[in-house]
Amino acid sequence: MTAIATAQSCANIAFVKYWGRRDDALRLPLNASISMNLDAATTITTVAFDPTLADDAVTIHGAEDGGKAARRVSEHLDRIRALAGISTRARVASRNSFPMGAGIASSASAFAALTAAACAAAGLDLDERALSILARQGSGSACRSIPAGFVEWHAGDTSAESFAESIAPPGHWDLRDLIAIVQTAHKTVGSSKGNALVSTSPFAAARLAEAERALPVIRRAILARDFAAFGTETEQEAIRMHAVAMTSRPSLLYWSPETVRLMHAIRAWRDEGLPAWFTIDAGANVHVLCEGPHADAIEARLRAEPGVLDVIANRPGPGTRLIADHLF
Image (cartoon, rainbow, N blue to C red; front, top):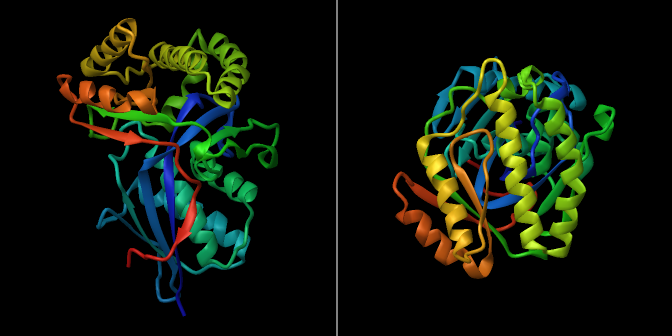
């Protein structure tokens, strides 16, 4: 008999970034981080353990994958099989509502959904903390997509201490993340490789110290719904992360000309009195942060900007959850 389960997970946007690891195998981060789940950027994944399969079969967006992505999925399934005490191969199907590999945390939602679906299909009943720890081992930022709303990932000293938990539910604050899509292709250097290069930047230690300073400031700003304090710190943290990427060896330049144009535009809008701030993950797409009352006006401006292909409008999203509708 085939055991099957399906999970849906949100991508997340980090306000204090995860950039740099002190343990690559366990994906233990150099610093704690804070993020928000994105309700319009989701992954749905179905997992079925099938005793008739000789190998795992992975399908992404309807196309069978036998490359790096499939290998990472199988490696993560091995962790779950070990916990469940089974060796059965699995059939996996996954579908995103947003571009993959373009700096919108597609690996976060993918591995969070994979973790929840595979554990359920394997008969494991893990609590949220255990799911977060397990998801982290597949993709670091995936641990932040397990809890709901606004989330803090504790760096921890051990694997058991490195997990994410919600600091505020989705309804706590009407914060919006309008993702300006300027690039849909996979970035040439993935986040995993970028994380491995952090120590080669001469600014890595300074950025780490600033991330540790900014974390409680951003946490307090979220809890107090203080948008000016939140936006100021979040935008600076994004620039610091990219400064490290740009000065790594080899240098990583994730921004495109459209990225830089939007950064200047957002600052100009702010000078005009329209409260908006930006953050950027490891990619060219720009996350424009604003509060609900200004979202429509800012989205309209973004759509009018040259080079913007689309805008994905997000509110704070739920945590990873099981759903009844399977992909096969």
